[in-house]
Length: 238
Image 1 (tube, rainbow, N blue to C red):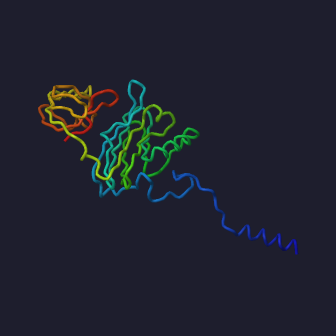
Image 2 (cartoon, rainbow, N blue to C red):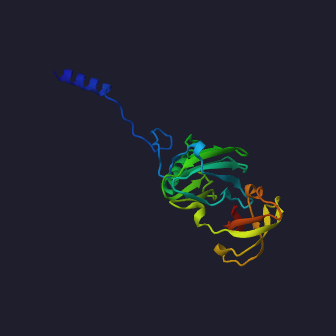
């Protein structure tokens, strides 16, 4: 009888389904939910607007994610057009600050390339896009989690709010006097910059390549400027 019970128990154990302990939902074994705290994959046919993003290293040894401020309305679908203008491989990851921090620790143990809709990895000179719907309000993060890159400055805030984006931004009127595309500088005759507590004057600003492509000397514009890495920079324009 004892042998029969042991044999029966062993057979039941073999026939029972095995349940493996799942890992995090970054593509290491667990089925990823359709939605994350930061949102969900967006429909490319229903994009509300596009944000141009540049990944690069600078002469000071920093690694940067450059774009206009990532202020987004809750429910908005954004196409991030991402270009790696650096000399190294970089990635662009959308997630919560906490999840990025967890993932960064794992990446430090083993540099893993994921195939997830909230991220893209690009070789030097390559470009790609992430289309994302931000379903929840909150403060999130865009980052590169390749070991050492985050610590070198490759992260920035993504602010999502019910009525955010352009509504709370105060634009300043100005006229473009001079463009120095090679240096990435533009001279603007402008009105008061309220957010910077500056009076009307003529000043030189930095601007990224995508922004400068929309500019022409003598053009009247409305723009937003802010200090980016200590430099006065045009961050938005219309």
